[in-house]
Image (cartoon, rainbow, N blue to C red; front, top):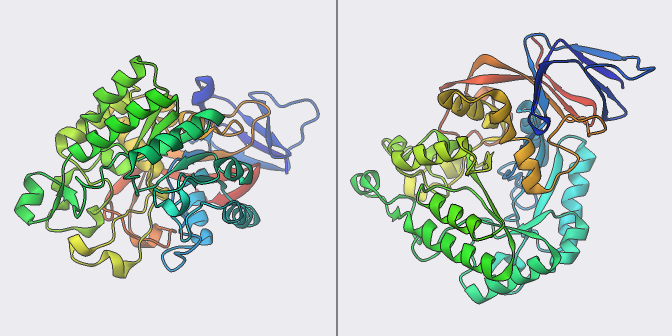
Length: 427
């Protein structure tokens, strides 16, 4: 299908483009920006008047719950949510059941996702077998099967000698290691930020030092081994100085922050709201402000949704017994737009955090931009339209989000994946 997207405000952060330009698509690729190529004849025209035409969004942390947790969500339900949210590329953490530590499991996941013909899936392989932190996975074989990086998800490696060897292995082949900084002993048994709110509610706390201690170790080992490091889901403002210092020392390190950490703090737990039970925990208001500013000035590279659908029974339990996680695929764009408005950032800079910058981290050369010849993954949305977040509008099987009942900016009207119109909301 040849598609002509006309009258839209074309925003392409990778090319620093923000202008009223038409977009032309043929054979699944961008074939023209501004002007149609010779001989182009549209079989479908989309009128994007009053809308933003942007690259399809890239989410650096989206759990689709397959294999092993289909009772919480399925590939079908979460792919539908991705399309409704304008998300065309998904990086998948390895904490499935079984963990993504074998090439066959990775190939099966990629095959299932490709058969659904919706969002592109980029598995993150398990750094160690079974995520047990004892024996290294066969990273080279996992890369051949389709993995783009390696991680321990939310399960830190206790034995730092194993972690050092894993980084050495990855550095030898240029593989990027994605780690969430959370010391297993300092965080053990905790469910909320170790502060005034946790003390008042009688909740076991996780101190900021749990992140700082782990992060210092990761950065020191990365410097020693030469590993390419990505720090996922920062929660503490104190982490920023460590990362900046490591960068000045020559460590190749990037980092991201979950969208909910830009808008919420431990005060939002209120009276034991289980929707606010997440890992890492919601920190103090000071931490939230520091992270938000660091994202605005570029010290934090990208935003992820940390999409973790949880079934109602597991979520509607006492706070300390509830399962951590929040649904975020359909909220990645609205929460990014809300953050950008608070900082008065141009849309081109805001969208970079969920398109071009995220593409660099995941190594997605074909996506995250609208250059001629690029894969035609496109998100068309109204940045000024507000929508009420309720259970009925969420396509994800998980309805667990602390933003229920709030109005957020940004409504996706069309999502295209490789030139195929996969979602259309109408106008």
